[in-house]
Length: 50
Length: 406
Image (cartoon, rainbow over all chains, first blue to last red; front, side, top):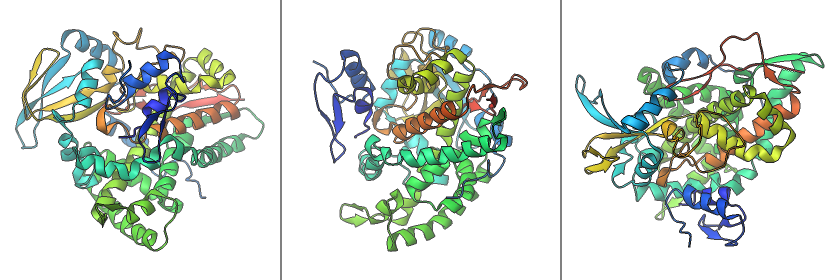
């Protein structure tokens, strides 16, 4: 849905493309804690941490 | 751009009627989360004289689960409330897949990157209000009432510009927007305000069709969905939602943020000296005193939340204010603390309806509070002012913020 909340919580890890779809810029762009917040803050649980 | 001189109408005189007369809902919510996390309560039905059971969900994990599960919990509850003033195509009242198709038409305009282009405009509007406050006093020590002179009139100017409502008409729009979003409190004011805004917008749509600009209305009048242009009714629904939503919650959240800082001068000083704290300070303010406390859904099938059966057909109220004070997630949740460990909160909701304007709200709060810290040295609550506090049961914010500076 392109809320952009992942890019808010972990801006060096996630971004949105021109179609407003989130993608991973750098899987280790932010500290683990920020990436966890991005996954937790995703409105549709589209982020799975492995 | 003409800046509205303070408040166009005396909204604060209506404050308790629309926001609810409650000073501190939080102690009672502590008990609810512990003893009755899903509270059945009788509320007035749409059929006059009849009461029906609705279910208030109080714990963070349950609130998030309800808002994420848009199949079990339909947004039709919001449509029933808001369609009379926002129209049948109102985004917040739609379910999938219709909601997703329509939201996509405006979601690009409200992404962080698009909004960065509007930040200088937000700064310009805030500076206009601060010029007035500071100009009154010259180099002398000054005083101001930051709700009337800044937080209330400011966000509508920004959302009106983004949407494409002529700047000279924002005062008129502000009063309509206020009565539209507060329709539950006074339908006698909400319905005529909605009609007036629609009549006015018809002319704006015509002008944007002929002469498009960089605004959301211009995008909508030219947007296509499945090869067809949007109808006027659909566009009216968008604007009658986005304008009040952009004006109302952000002014409340900005006031709550300032109140949190002014009542915690050590944190205000820390933020003044280190602006890298701003992002987490904004999030903490929104968690600590969320401007909108509750949102509703309709249960489409029987479900169980925290051990309580919620039968199909009943209304479910997600208490985001209670969720944001859940002591299993935040230590001493009642305390405003910009230094606490940052984690997502429920103030913007969750699921497919998560607040479209959250990045705009964050940006506007950051700009306004940053400017106050930059331009009002030693800003502090006026010690002579009595009983300044945050108030409200459905919506929350301070009704006034009397300050001294210099």
